Length: 290
Ligand SMILES: NCCCN[C@H]1CC[C@H](NCCCN)CC1
Image (cartoon, rainbow, N blue to C red):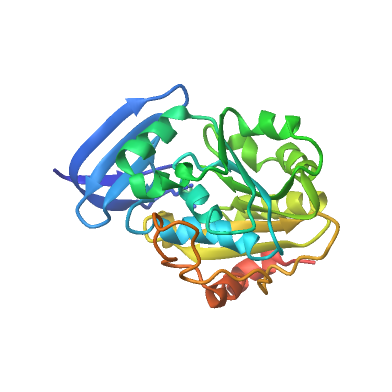
């Protein structure tokens, strides 16, 4: 009955709207307002504090790219940490890699986990994998406590830098990620939109260049229901065995999945992997500035 418009000071003067058929859940956790609605054309939609987190129709683009850009860039990833990502979609994608032995996930808001399991079973299916261990808590504290060199890869599937995820965009957090990664380990973080947030991205890139002594790259993809229709990722590696993010060494193909409960890849492939690092000139000059 009506429309949901995503209005925020983070994207002034514009708003993406979705036609609402039915509101399925509304609640307030210790951290944020949580809402689920059935949209007319994008399936069910998860909203946190008025910001669209995922829709059933296009979540594949974000979850597959944020996961396979890092994991296909290193040989034999074994231990992975997901920070945020309480909906379980990233877990579903990590579980496709047969070399994976253990997946830690640290999500601050248990309501996101519970709501995803109830309303988004094809996303929360990621929790069914026996290699997954869920920690409800603050990712900043979790990383501080993580032993040095614990992980081959860290994926920071955060919301935006206004609200609970603020600290996940700051230098001390990046330093704790670098410490928790093995030499040549990789991190992939949600890194906003080149159309909306070039200044935020500039700061993130500068911090990453200081903290990660391997390679530092920015990639981007299309997600129609995120503001400006695109979202980016920081891909960084620590000092150690060189990582060339643009040429995946550890391919995953459309039908490579471990259990029949998750379908084939809908978005990611090796061509779109390499293409994701090609930037328009206005972004290239800021991000690749020497
Ligand atoms: N696993 C899906 C979680 C989605 N994370 C974020 C949710 C907020 C969204 N705002 C985009 C704001 C404009 N860049 C970015 C992705």
